[in-house]
Image 1 (cartoon, helix red, strand yellow):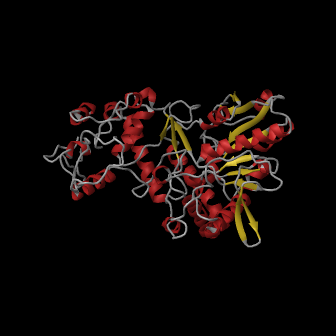
Image 2 (tube, one colour; image 1 turned 90 degrees about the vertical axis):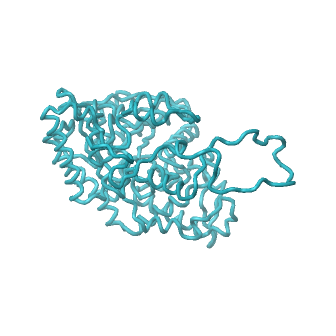
Image 3 (cartoon, rainbow, N blue to C red; image 1 turned 90 degrees about the horizontal axis):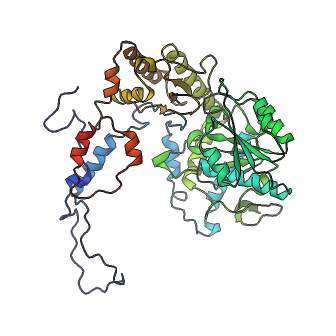
Length: 506
């Protein structure tokens, strides 16, 4: 273990307590005089006691947040192996474009005449999303992936009701699906019928046919699926669904593995959301807000939500009522996320068709390279065949030796890596899901692979205690994750022994 230091710092990495522990309620970075003679407009709601908030000077405040930022892992620091949510490099060109005047400073209530450039950008983005997916229509307004799922399922619901088949309430969902799929179906008023998983990690046509009936509304399948595999029977499944009078919803969370290579419309898809942050370089998580445009087939296009962008002469308008449509309504108050649209279109135009195709090819190549390097050292449940963009390992080969998935993840922290996705997909016990993305060079893949291989060597050497004590080098040692999730402390009170709590955690 690293020897303790007098300051608590480790080299150039500064120790940093909670801001409540360093600040004091009696001072502030800026002092303002009490207002004199000014009438209050708070109608008796003025605070009776001072806020118990920490006061810091400007340099103290800056140092606090800079030190916190140094404790974060980021794609600008190294490879981000977190599978199932693409943590890839976002080109700075796209970030710059999103900050252009006229895009970054828009207000949703501006007159339409003043936002023609923004509407043209959205219209062009919609064109390319339709072109890439082979679908005739797209709704841009959904704010994220699950919101896009909801959009697609509401369009399906509206289409069924329009043809007098609102009685169809059952939605088929594979057990390997993203958790948002069954949740979205239920939120849209459907009941969920699970398609059980098979040992090969794929959805089988026979299992789908066994579930079909006059009450089936749709099927929701992720392709490539959450096991990192392409569904080989997808076209035949789509045909069977359509013959039964139902619709095919495709979860597009993994579209980055096939963009430019496969058009979902050619696979029989009726609706699919696209996570712009996964495929087209929109920041994920803290860089949000998100965007989950939903492409629709000809059968569902008339039910796309309003407003629609309509070109009248040389002017684009946002129409609440467009001729010949049966929109199910609105998804949200306004039309979408301009910064996300700008980044996505900049990404598309800078790559071109050949570049987007290479995005998919490189994502799949990188994943298969890692699979080839790691398969001799870990259990790979579907490793006998090539994967798509994700590498799926499990802990079945290391658990008998006393080390589990969570231990391997904690050991990676000391090696300077954010852990892979743990215990997902749920159909694989002890899953370790790694998504290297298309933006990592071979050198970085090799560095990560060598760390994983070295950790496997320590497992084989019987160093169980090493894993159970990890991490040792992080600002906090191993925490009780279950207790933290179930009993979070969301409010700090003066007198809380935060330093003592940290020591107890260690």
